Length: 186
Image 1 (cartoon, one colour):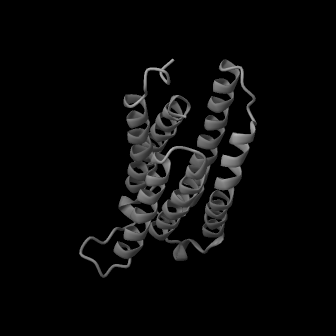
Image 2: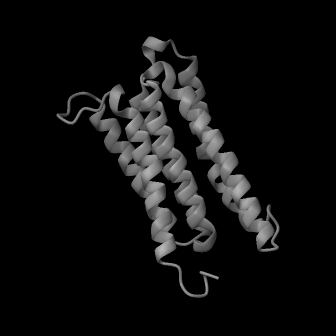
């Protein structure tokens, strides 16, 4: 588990951080860019993850779509599909009505739910990471309401995506790498 998940978390985390920096660099800041851009990043990350998992399966001489992989995918799919749906609904909204901060909060909550669901077929750490995403999403919903002194606005949301989906995944990947046992490292 750790041997397979560490490179995956590191790769997805790196894509998240790079995507946030690229959006800032190109000036793609604001609700008119946000949902489409991050849906594209999510699709790219999912494809890269599938390719990495396939490569790991071939290298280990294991089936790519094994029963454990299928169970994890089936557990995660409803939450990830809901996130895709919310992103598509956001794209259909009038640009003046879009709310990237709220969408980010919902995406964090749903991603956390997907990780937690996958955790029923893995070790405990992924469930804890899922809870972290859910809690951060809930805090973000509270702070985005504007009544808090820590209000988060559209200008910070790209970095928030890079921090949450990028750095948290990278940190989890580093944790997995550092805690590999001698048998798992092979």
